[in-house]
Image 1 (cartoon, helix red, strand yellow):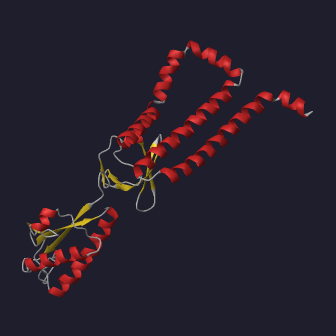
Image 2 (spheres, helix red, strand yellow):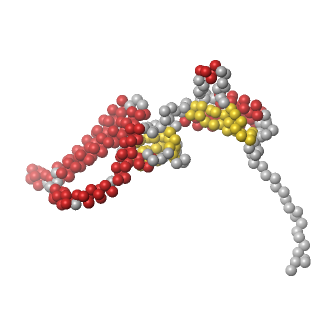
Image 3 (cartoon, rainbow, N blue to C red):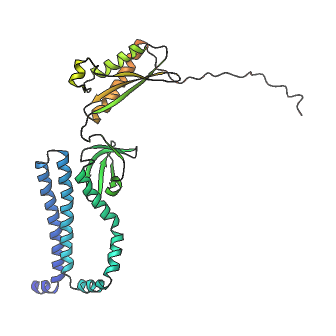
Length: 289
């Protein structure tokens, strides 16, 4: 009886087996490839290449497996023959339908080849979207922002965006420490405090060249930036090894500068308004009409 059932439902059983085998093979291949990536990927660029190959390999396995399953169904051969007559129209329709998908695949390929960013790079785009590149697939790029949310952007969109890559070529970053002081405060003392607080922070790095050190160029540059309506704006240049350290450096230095300014009597101005009160006496309304 079992042999009769198998012979009767041979075609659907074969198709189901092919589909199941395709899914299992794709999953096993993905796991094996991830283990290979963990052992071989030593840099972010290598990880980017391997991740893209992983997605491409899975896509190829599914396409080949499902195509073979469809090819095993005789009924679809007649459908394919009837479609040959309208092959030109079909090609145009498929071309329009897959235009965006193909654009994403080609853009993803260009991203992997030319590497405007790689996995683990910190990028900013559209002024309000920023985070760390987590994955680059055939269709989209996944960015993890600093609230641990995932921003999913199609490759064709992000490849046309102007973005800021904090890790491109080198990861060192300069953060501006801008502090405004009142016109009556000691400018030289304020500059000295800003330079000392930046220099003694453990996250600050020395970016001077050997000739700069020989010529006694200060490690931290501090300049008067501008004279505003109610304050003198002073800027200090703080260098850090990467964007994450730069953010922490800026926060810590800003806090320490404020505390020392308070001790030394250096005033950080803030907006003030003078309020005058009108006379409380009410106008004589007796002669009003």
